[in-house]
Length: 109
Length: 133
Image (cartoon, rainbow over all chains, first blue to last red; front, side):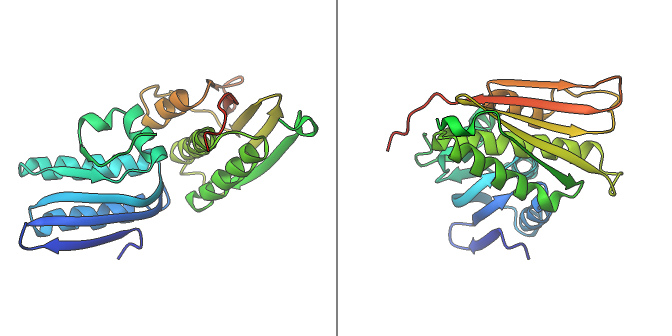
């Protein structure tokens, strides 16, 4: 169990509701990756990832999100990111990942 | 900008262990804050320093006993950061996402190697923004 990931399997809407928190960097990104990819393997559902408590994410954390997206797209699912803090929104934009993910909520700086 | 803080150098060494990158981020954040950078500028500096350290750790992960240096040099409305490893890399992947992030977040960013004996990442942030609130 990774402390930065909390989740709920919404069986009605068949969606993985995930909440990321704290800082995700090279130190813990592998653990976050394992957690998320295991969920996608367990139930092939869309993901809605709430980032309101995610204060920082680095390039290795972004790579984890891309790995998840790749896995979810393989079963024609979607990954949405919502409630991005301005600094997280900025790194997602400068890496052009805002074109790959569904971004919900106001993440403008 | 506090004139008493110009031309100071803060230097520390970190082991090639990802557990301590957060220490580099915190230090970067603290110094940029002390220099009067805006919240957005502080976040940029913090992220760029973290990416520089991450790049070094990824490149030299087999040398677990080694250390690398992180220096912060304060300027007039600017902060220069040097991250140096006393080992060289064979090839610099300019498409590395971390390198792209550093270049996008900072005003200047350079990756150099002296006589193929080291890797030096230098980056500079200039203070421009005023706090909006």
